[in-house]
Length: 272
Image (cartoon, rainbow, N blue to C red):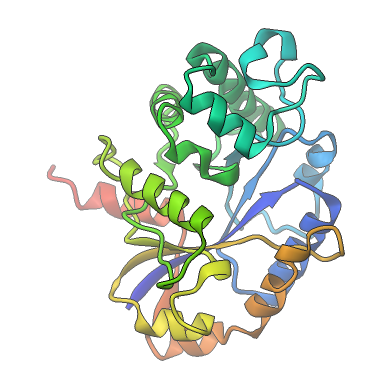
């Protein structure tokens, strides 16, 4: 049987994205969310009555899109002349050529953790990131330091990204970074067997993918929307709504879980 975190990224990124997540919450099939705190309008999600308090909300770290939490003049290596993040391509090019200062990256990520804590009254139960940037060196080391210093128990970590044979180059780049992350000293944190992105299913259907995977702990990462602004996201909400979640659970194909449940299980399995 699979243990599956069914996870919606980007809560608060854009009104259409948040609306898509609302629909998915109503439909069922989600076990966890993550909040992006950098967009100016995202604080409204704190008091949003359509998101049950029982649905865990982690922090979706962002260094690639929109404006930072920090004063842009204090993190100049991360932003353009207009104070905006550089976009994924611009960020990675600067990161890989040594142009991103680690202290400025840490400043901004700590500011996002502090903003989340101010909004919700507690630390995030887990960390993941926009465009999977926490998988790349040296971002992953900075995220590890912040998770340790703030005692944030879980980070999105997986041994591999599940891909079809002819996956696009971007997916293969993410898959490589994901596999590298699993080898960099995170043995004290829960490690997922694999990540599933509905854009790149190893099998033609979502249910078929679940039925074909070997036993283990997995995360299905949803990028949802309800509107025209993000056409690449549009197929995912119907896919989530069409998935026979109850049938998959009652036939012991999978059981939905959360990062906190994985963390508690990892604590229970450690020698006393």
